[in-house]
Length: 124
Image (cartoon, rainbow, N blue to C red; front, side, top):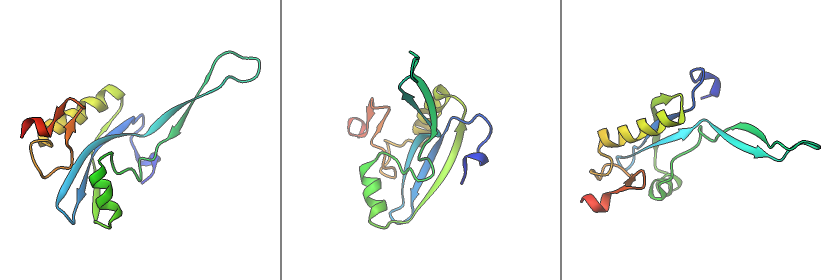
């Protein structure tokens, strides 16, 4: 519920959203923080970096069909399945769970591609 409940040093997490109304799922990853570059202070040359908490509490994924179903009132449940501590680790575990769960091999998942390289339409 809060960023303080996450383990110290957490970078992001892999999650699964369950659409309980349609019995479909979506697997994805989410960063806990965003890095924002600000212009330099007066009389300095270096740009400033500010880290801001992301919208991880309310984020529902990038799949348009899933988001349409949520807006139409479908009941969902969000589960965090892996907390990661680096960007590389987060990308690895998202890919690992996509493969383990077979997200593009099954119509049970909203996911229609993995890493923008492997598409459901190419496999089925």
